[in-house]
Length: 333
Image (tube, rainbow, N blue to C red; front, side, top):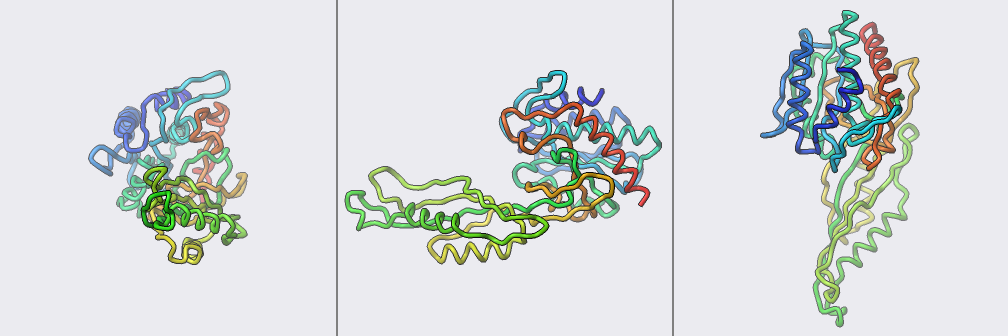
């Protein structure tokens, strides 16, 4: 199966986060047919990471995630592009990594492994499970795949997810003095957050805040007793100074509920590859036991998660060349 066919076959198997079992089985069967030793590592009752080796305990690993964001969009193609869900995030990457591994294998290089995880798009539960796998201790380099435009990412921002909840007192809206609006309190907090300049970092850049969800109230004629907003902060620093700043902003007017956090990560730089820092978060913060991380993949993060997601066929081919070059360099260092 060639690079483009493998990409489309993977994309044809729906695998929205939480529903990756079928694509895991597909990968297992495909890799076994190529002669790989494949383990399905259970993550939940119907979710498995896919771990594949050729011989012993590989020093260099390829990795990315099998899940996608919703909705499922079946693959289509033209002469230049493959379109659909997972084209660049990250099933095209899986196909490019397997193709690169097979090319290296033909050159006699078998000191490589493959790790494909579940649920990266939600909470990286697959990566957290993989971090405890015994093979992690033998890994020297982990080449993770995300859409980096085939540049080598030498850093990625962290992510800090949380909610702010406010509480008031319900009352008839004709008599607002009898109540206490949780929504108005939340709006005051949101305005303070929007006007705050959070810490920056020379390497990672600025910390950005996205107010992603707002919910609250009971009815139009009731003073709202409850309200909440959900946030995602792209961390350019560690979480601690950001959380302290938020506590100073909220000042007891609401409660902060932390949902998840991953810190910014610096990654291995290799001479001869275009380099940059990316703003998104990956599985890498949850795979520290797999040692030295690298990040590279075909496609643009700007089209990932959109209805028009695509990957250039030429970028897939270039990624195979780059992955092979990286492995050769890493195994000779």
